[in-house]
Length: 506
Image (tube, rainbow, N blue to C red; front, side, top):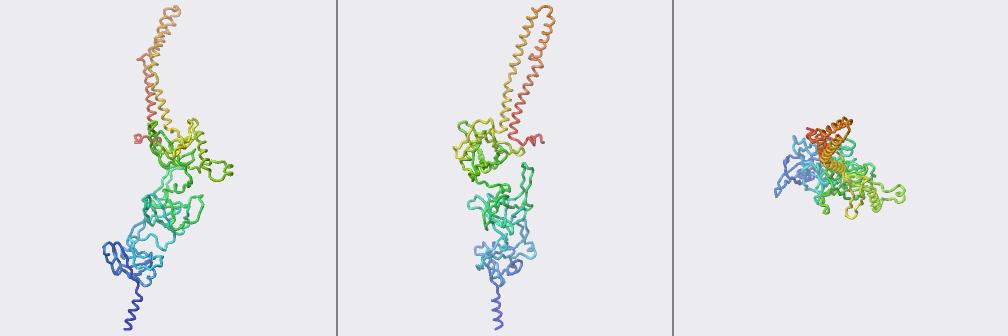
C-alpha cells in the first residue's frame, strides 16, 4: 500500500500540464502518435482530437512534460509542421517520412495560459529573433507577399511578416522585420522602396538595368537605404511608420519642403505628357507635372489643354550671396513672387517639348523667348497661370503650312497669259518695223523675227516649256502638301525618327 501510494503521488507530481489547442482542421494529426516539439525536442504528445460543438474547428488536447509548464504563457504559439513551399523556401520536408508534428514558439509574457489558438501557417519570425519591426504604408500590394525579402545594400536583412488593408481602404500597411545587426541602420531619414522585378531605364546615361536579386524578381522584395548627404539621426523606434516608394529613384530624391502649383494653358496637343514628367529650366529639373485635363474656353469656343505643375522654389537660388548673409533663412513668398514676375517680364515662357524620340514622351520646358509677346502671371485664380509658348513641332507645322499656302496661291495661269500678250505685242512691233525699216536692216529684222517666233513657240500653250513649267509648279505644290503631312505624322509618331514607319520596317 505504501509503495502503491508513493508511486501514485510520484506520478501526480511528475505529470506534465494538459493544454488545449484549436485548429481549423486536423490534417496530419493522430491521437497518441503526433508529437509536440520545441527546437526538434519532444515535449509532449497529442492525447485526443475532437470537433467543436458548431463543427467549425478541431479541438486538440495534448499532454506536455513537467519542465514545459513555466513556458506555457500568453503569446506562446503552436502550429502544425507540414511540407510547405512559401517565400522561396521549402520547409517540413522531413515530415514526409516521419509524419506531421506540432511545433512551439515560446512567448515572452509571464501570464500563464493553457488554451491556445493554433496557427495555420508557421510564424515568419521567431520570438527569439533579434531585430526590429517596421510599418510601411503603400498605395497597393504590388507583387509583395508574406516572406518577401528585405534588402540592405543587396544583403538580405529581413522579410515581410504581414500586411493589412487600411481601415479607409485607400492603401496597404506592411509589417516587416529587419534583423539584427541591419536594424541599427534604420533611422527616421531612411527610405524604403519596392525592389520587385527589374528596373530598366533609358536616359542620358545610357541603358541601365537594376535589380536586387533573382529572388526579388520572382517573389518581390523591399530595399532600404539612407540617402547620401542626409543627416543621420537616432535609430527608429520599434513599429515606426515609413512610406514605401515605387522605386529607388523616387525614394532617394531630395524631399521638397515647399511646392508652388501653377497651371499652364496650351492650345495644342499634349500627347506624350504624363504625370511625373519633369519641368525643366535650362537643363535643370525644377518641378514636375502633376496632372493634365481638357477645358472648354467659352470666349473662343475652343478645347484647351490645362497642365498642372509643381515648382520647387528651393531648387532656384533667388538671392545673391550678400543678400543671403544679410537676411538668412528661406526667401519669403513676396520675394519669390517678384522674382517670377521678373522672369516672365524677361521672356520666360512654358513650352511642350519632346523628351525621348523613341518613346514619344514629352516634358515641360521653361525657357526665355526673345520675341515672345508681353505677358504676366495671372495670380487671380486659386492656381496661378504661367504664360506659355507654342511648341517647336507646332511652329514647324505652321511654317510649312504657310509655305504651302503661298505656293498654292502662285498665279501660274496669269503669268502665262501675260507672256502671251507680250509676244503678241512683240509680233506687231516687228511687223511695223519690217514695213518701215530700210533695206539694209532687213537681214537684222528677219533674224530678230526668227528669234521671236522661236520664243513664241517656246511659250505657246502647247509648248514643252510651258508644260514643264506647269508640271514643276504642281510638283512644288505636292511637295508642300507632303511636308505638311510629314510634320503631322512626326507629331503623332515621334519615334519614327529612329525606327521609321512600320511599313518600312517590314
